[in-house]
Image (cartoon, rainbow, N blue to C red):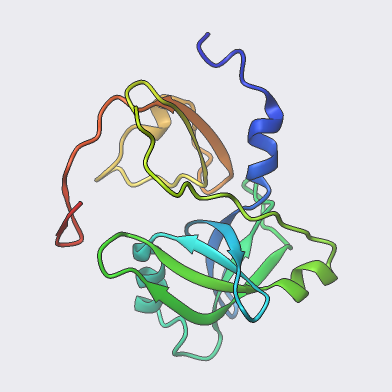
Length: 185
């Protein structure tokens, strides 16, 4: 098929810097909130993790960064539905973009590397591609299922396992404006 020529190292290398973001509360199983990916380091030598603003807003709504015993953590190895023992706590500091559904959170580089985890930040394009029509793309993330919004994952091969790392190839068919988070984007 269309994706037969795709080399596994094109997916495997960047997938190592993609993480599941979990809300962790003392005494409870971690709750999957979304996906993030490492985009670089800051002046404090912390890894900078980019995620969606609504992921961070969901964490804040549940008490993260304000209440004791509630943490936000990254899991870079969640490829099965089992409970992970490799959760790395995020700092209780964040930045939410005022226009786009983007947020930045921070992760201790020292803590990761002390456990033998070394990450390579993903490269972010500096400009929009000249020709996007039929541009091949791939999304690496941890899909979740919300039947009120999104009936497709079950039908496109994700089955009943959600919150685990997946790669989904596709083609850009069009670019459209839409209203998102009270902004036209």
